[in-house]
Amino acid sequence: EGRDRLVDHAIATLALCEAYRITNAVVYRASAQSAIDCLEASLEHGIDGDESLAGWCVLALESARRGALNVNNHESGALFGELPEASPVSFLAGTLLDGKKDDERALDEWDAKASIDHEHLCFATLAIYEHDGPDGPRWRAWQRQVGAAVMQLQRARKDGCEEGSWSTDGSFASDTRGRVYATAINVLTLELYYRYSKVLGMEPHDDK
Image (cartoon, rainbow, N blue to C red; front, side, top):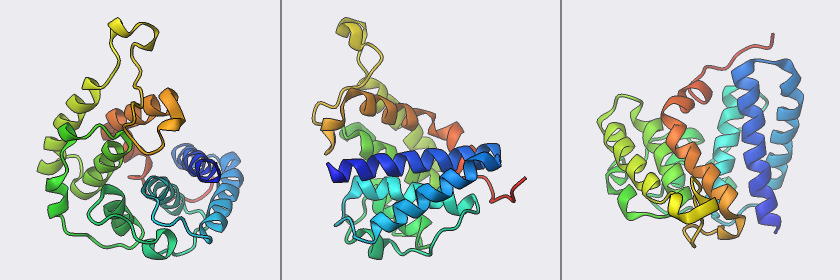
């Protein structure tokens, strides 16, 4: 329960930081800064290599940093413990927090068609886009692959009121988070190619 609350807080913090960065509205700054401060305080206790939680925390911290909010210097190992080697979250943490490029051969081993893990697909999509950019060959190949994989899992008309949504079906560790979470994360994955550059791709700004 405590872990799920922290995941919720990390996602909400990311949303606040994105709102501040995109709008450049000072009204969001205090709330975004408070959310980051709370997140950093929570991370002092460690998260024991929880890959899902680490992924959302990495994105929240990086969005805050690029938004010129006050963020401590973090090393991914100190924050999250041992993350699974060559995983999408490990690659993101190394790139965004540690400023290093992990062995890029790992990117070629990820197979969207072989995975029904919604979070894995989302973080893998972010990692490849961050590494390759919108015009890179890896990204172009992955974009086609992940789009087909995600849409294949979407509920169809025959599923009645579930049409258009995604179910968990045990597809990721936090399957207790339900259909709303599964649907939201798949929509994020599908829209990343035009949304990401408008959020983390922007340069830090001064308040206006």
